[in-house]
Amino acid sequence: MRTKYIFVTGGVVSGLGKGITAASLGRLLKNRGYKVVNQKFDPYINVDPGTMSPYEHGEVFVTDDGAETDLDLGHYERFTDENLNKNCSITMGKIYQEVIERERRGDYLGKTVQVIPHITNAIKEKIYSFENKDVDIVITEIGGTVGDIEGLSIIEAIRQVGLENSAEDVIYIHVTLLPYISGSNELKSKPTQHSVKELQSFGIKPDILVCRTEVEIPDNLREKIALFCNVRKSSVIANKTASCLYEVPIMLEKEGLADAVCTHLKLDKCKANNQGWEKLIDKINHVSDKEVTVAIVGKYVKLEDSYLSVIESLHHAGFENGVKVKIELIDSEKITSKNVKEMLQKCDGIIVPGGFGNRGIEGKIQTIKYARENKIPFLGICLGMQMAVVEFARDVLELKGANSEEFDEISEDPVIHIMYDQKDVTKKGGTMRLGSYPCVIKDQTLAKKVYKTDRIDERHRHRFEYNNEYKEKMEEAGLIVSGTSPDGKLVEIVEIQDHPYFIATQFHPEFKSRPDKPSPLFVGLVKACIK
Image (cartoon, rainbow, N blue to C red; front, side, top):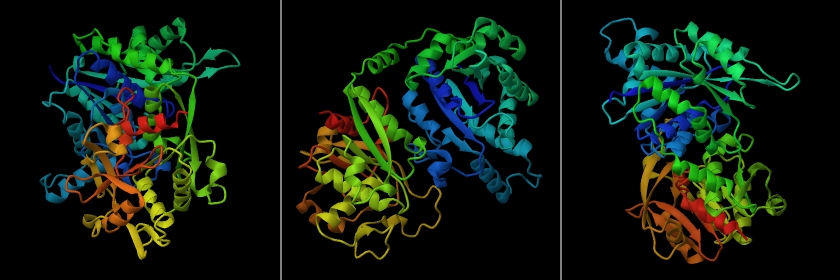
């Protein structure tokens, strides 16, 4: 079978759910027996999101091969249960960087380097990179909205892909908005019409329209949209706001999205096996009324997407434990030794997630101390683990000057120090310890009880590490090292055994959690929260 290409564009406004649409379609096509890969193009000039503040673009998602990517790749992996790679997240910064490097090498043989064909060709290379790699269908989401000046070269490139392949091998899906005017009780199609007109002006005719809407689309309006936008009525798909985002694939299945795609691409496997996903939705819908509250204490709490994978992992753990998880996002800058009890006393569990920089650090340390002393279930992730070590050193070992070298380069007790191979690194982008690495788990530990195995692979994103010079003192005082790198040099997991649930990891377990395969660490945390 020739590789098929699906392009998902968006119009009118951002935030309509292109990523969820692309992820849902990936799941539906996988359920029909096809090997599917999801890919995202972002128009910004950053080489990757790794140097961007979470407030700018949400969390940085990390793949097994160490790519720092857009958060939509998290949606893709959670929905399709496929591990993606660096070729699945492409920015225009990466494209321009590659083209300029080629020009510097003389690869273009003296030709003038231009957006067309050189930039567009580089974009197409990324799209075609999955050919001959046992991939049936590539679903490519285009970031931004149609008409954005920074995204025009991507739109031109995918137009060319349509010309270079037969009509039955390429399909364009346009996600747009049908605003509801409550005063007149009407859905308005004009924004969709104008958005389609804009896309057509660049030479692309959408084959399917996915219309974000708050209410059902009346039959007469579907006919109108089909007529004015030059698509079949069956290709006007409603995407209503769902109570749970994992319901979206089944909603789109009922709307006929996957069937419309199969018809256009002349795919012969049209019968879907959605039983597994339907079972998941049934499980979600039958969660008990019991609720546990988990606090996420960080410094980017004003934007939920900053901790998207952590939040979703908590929901996954809630599904598994049959309880609702209420999440409280708490600004660590606002926590002090005087108010920590007041701010956290209503929480059944606490997570201190990853991050960088010293803003809010002391609040995180006070949070960890409160969780440790008051036997509150606690999970520390990356920086959260490092601050758990600092807190223990200060308050149990009474090393009052204990700190991380990230925040105090001349600390008298650097219990967290920079990794040896990071000492001479000066460039910030893509230079951390990134991607999946193995961890060996010790017997008779909480980590072993949770994971039920002695070896795991988890994803990392850090420059600093546990200082092994303090390991003996820490363990003698009760902070147990329960997971290390296979050579024993890097501490991956620490825990306190005289505690209902106190565990912290250098890695990011949230990146591998799936709604039907939740992270064991999150499952354990939520279970410990149930009273």
